[in-house]
Length: 297
Ligand SMILES: Nc1nc2c(ncn2[C@@H]2O[C@H](COP(=O)(O)OP(=O)(O)OP(=O)(O)O)[C@@H](O)[C@H]2O)c(=O)[nH]1
Ligand SMILES: [Mg+2]
Image 1: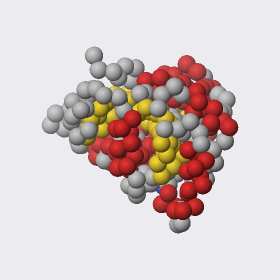
Image 2: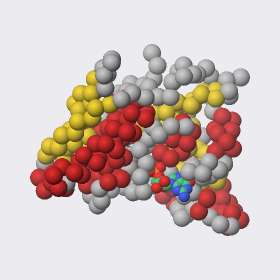
Image 3: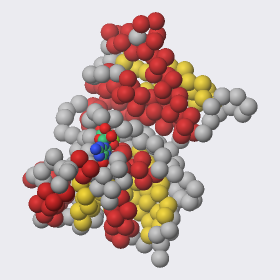
């Protein structure tokens, strides 16, 4: 018997959703950082195992802030929840189940499994029991303590997901790990590098547009990306003295892209100002749009 299904990974910012996706994929597909709101659009990863196939959708963190960017992020979560057969709700031990979470769970008309991530940070695992009990009192199908980073509990969670998944044939060929194009992941690699190299609001103030992604036989692939900043004053920060900072950014992002694509890359970065783009819904939509259609024909 084969199982297959779409799994939406949802939860508050920074709990480790993207880390879990990467652990299951065995490759660094989704951007991870120490800071919240790293993921700004859904990332799709395909996991094929002997029991069947999951199409994971890693989503932006649930957040109630106002603004075009946040509205876009919420629309991404909504779309993943709509496409999902199963929902994997992720939290970490410092979160306590509250009414808001309870009503969120109630609002989902699909099986919801809960993962309490980052249990490697808990010395005495017994202290988790009351928390697990509190979660179990909500309308959840199962609760799994895990560490996405250290790999603890991941096979139990996967088993649980397969148990809850509908029967069905795999959606995609076994060898596929995603159906998003490399240009999507190139932008994500640049975003992750921004989080690693720049502080404060800079990583959030940049949106990345891949102008050109040319695979070239016999020579390096050519990628040209535009980094739009919100204000003129952010431009010199991105560039750094003598262009040092952006050079470092380019090198770091290029290495990530080369690792994922398995090809040599020439990455060109340009910085432009798009005044207050975060407040402009049409710009946000254009900038962050993931591939429209990902269900197989
Ligand atoms: N100790 C520990 N840290 C973890 C674990 N999983 C993730 N982290 C760390 O938590 C931080 C956030 O991880 P992400 O995977 O980016 O979290 P996210 O939920 O995708 O965050 P957003 O995309 O911002 O919503 C990173 O610094 C991770 O290294 C874990 O199991 N244990
Ligand atoms: Mg994330």
